Image 1 (cartoon, one colour):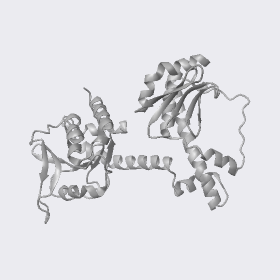
Image 2: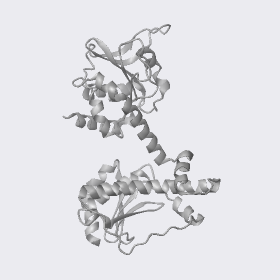
Image 3: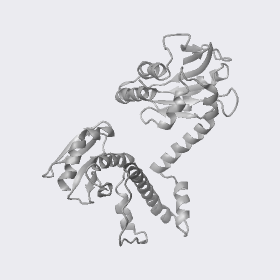
Image 4: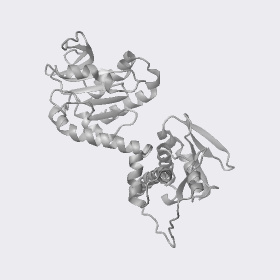
Length: 358
């Protein structure tokens, strides 16, 4: 099995079992040891490769232990500290890693709850572990750009010099990506003010702030949708249709319109689900004919932007997500989704809906 396939298999296991794992010990057995063995390639039962409960007395701290130490050529290379899978990782959890980092030869340390893996090194000061990770791997949302870097940590491909040399860029690029994602989800005052100042020449009053808080959020969501649409069209070899006799008007912000627009919150999951339905439907009609409308109760995917031609409905507002499919009499059947990929299981019903209207 290829490295990426092994990573995907473990990610699927974590997704299915994470909520059932309640203790640190269970997390180690279910997620951490499989990661060390199947992903990194070290024998967890060979003390010459993996030392559990690794002890190295530090100053007045005697008998403290790090959960695992990975050894290569007789030297400790990676220290691993574990927490329960249901808990959020915090830098306070890494106290042993900080102390052990300075008294061992290890240049790498990992803090994990089995779901998220935070990897640290000593970029800021030699032999002193950084307070921020240079690489964060979330098994529930794997960033594929990080896979080659994770592979450098494996037994067969371990390359400490390459890892350290790439760590500086990884650290800041990863942090920037996470901050950008955070701003897209919940724009901060600084983000709102920055963009407002680029398009609005008046004073940045509280009223203007309130108006543009909604507008920046709306523009962000539309930008993401259009970017994904453009990539989908490019992948399908489709060019955008020209706008014949189309005009674009600009009007002042009207409070009533603003209130109406901001009552509906379009989520990234809804947009991702829409793109999956659209990709399926494009097997029957041109991509530009597949449109979407968000409503309070569901997110609709339509043919020709016509409410009388519903292809599917995404009910993503609750804890349980559903894909709604309608028969010729417009009777809706909801199908529970454990993941967005399960939409593909209903591909034929989606295509049939498109054929029915087209």
